Amino acid sequence: MADTPEPFTPETTRGLALEASATIGHAGAGVEFLRLGENAIYRITGTPIVVRLGRSLGALADVRKEIRVARWLEEAGVPAVRLSDETGDEPLIVAERHPVTFWRYVDARPPAPELRDLGRLLRLLHDLERPAWLALPKFYPFVRVADRLERAPAAANPDDVAFLSDLFTDLQERYEQLCFEFPLSPVHGDAHLANLMRDASGEVLLLDFEAFSYGHREWDLTVTGIRRQGFAWLDDAQYATFTDAYGYDVLDWPGFPVFRAIRELTMTTWLMQLVDDPQAGDEFHRRVDDIRSQRFPRHWKAF
Image (cartoon, rainbow, N blue to C red):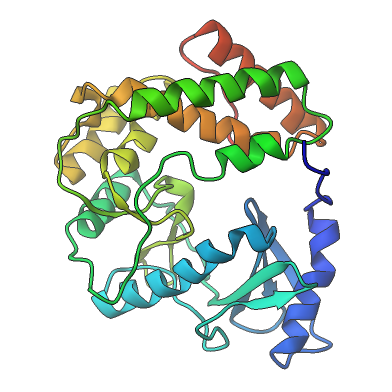
């Protein structure tokens, strides 16, 4: 197992965000913490600039891709978050290991985006022609799973890590045997309501482009499908607003159970990175136990 990485928390990343801010001419300005996930996200105080700080240089290829995708979506007129002028063709690197990009701040307003908004934006995205200049990676649903398992925190139960590693191997084999309903298209990769925002004008915007690829749109639809069949977070009427807006129900696709299992694996290995936090650690153990026992519906908490 690789050395345990340093913690990636609001406390450890604030100084890095300040360093990035100073690099673009905002030395002395504060930063406001917004969100922590694969990235730490801050707003430079008193400006419309958002700092997006990556966990490590292992994400560098994805960050470069995000820059290209953001420029394509702006060119195509897709409602989405936009890069700030401070972002060039290459991300800034701070502390020799964290890639940074700068984005335009969105003053999110109610009402919250709805499933019909997600279905509509996904259909718009999936029907786009990819321009010749835009290189997107081939779709691969297990992005970062192997790395997360290899770099599992010391606090993660070794038996849980071994179980997830075996499941990873099995699901890779099952994935290779799938048949798909649609032609290849641009794919968001992490298409859920938390990756939509409504701006001050009322327009719903798409955000978070690090998982973009060219491949199977069924993956984007599965994200909402498992919230209906698997987690029971949605009732039939709520789910119907999504399928009606998109024009297809992925639950009718025979490959859905495999994609559901892969998605659950990616969600669980993502959470595994946070097991030092007691609440995240408890949720991680719950998820592994549910997957082991095949208990449905899953009673998972969102993080």
